[in-house]
Image (cartoon, rainbow, N blue to C red; front, side, top):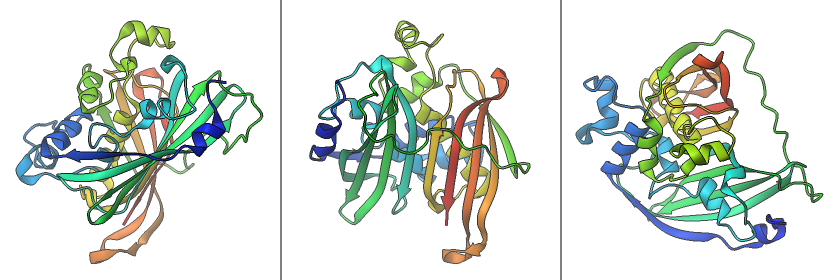
Amino acid sequence: MPVDAAGALAAAPRVREIAWDHKDVQLYHLGIGAGRPATDPRELRYTLESRLHVLPSFATVAGGGAPGVIGTLSAPGVDVDLARVLHGGQRLRLHRPVPVRGRASAASRVVAVYDKGTAAVLVLRTEVTDADGPLWTDEAEVFVRGEGGWGGERGPSGRPSPPPAAPPDQIVDRAVREDQALLYRLSGDWNPLHADPEFAARAGFERPVLHGLCTYGATLKAVVDTLLDGDVTRVRDYRTRFAGVVYPGETLRVRMWRTAGTGGAGAGGARTGEARVAVNAVERDDAPVLADTVVRYG
């Protein structure tokens, strides 16, 4: 079996040193759609080095890209065709705000392997620490089609939960540029699915698709800008499931519900709480893109 669950779980963490500076942060922000309008002060905090704030989802590309899908496929005990792989979900826990420049150690290992019958699911966890202690913990959930059926643990249900029944508190639309995937991949995700039409066709798509983590970042930016008054340091935890693809040139509709804890106060009197989020592709009859999406903030 190309996925050796026991071997993957028993392997020691792979440790690498990562570093980044303001140029990496600015490129990432442009890659998820920041900077429009270019002179808007709310956008300049993502694009101008003299006032730069770091959107926490930058952690997924810091140092040239978190291991994610590609890293999972190079883990011990895993030998599968990239064309049969899907990014199923992502979770990011922030221990401190991400600095504009930094140097850190990233330790990655497969912490779970599930047997879904027609697919295997691997969970790759990355712990990032700098000289002052833990910075963030990142988890990528990767589906490998055709690799299930060995009788292993099935793991959590893969069915997305429906969004809240109440009308959303906020709705924003975000246009995706035609070249968005080509720009985003410069931050380190070189999967040809997002650039090569022939590879995309072999994987079953009509044309290259946007990186799921690009949608992930664009969605967090929409939440921070809309619900948190642009304060990136308030984000504590951000998770999602990738429910469908986005094609460059489409429009993302981001629906947001404040669901818990908005009456409490954190440091400095800032409200603490949680937002549920649903993201859909407008041009394809509101097709789901991100599901089970939660942003916790302080």
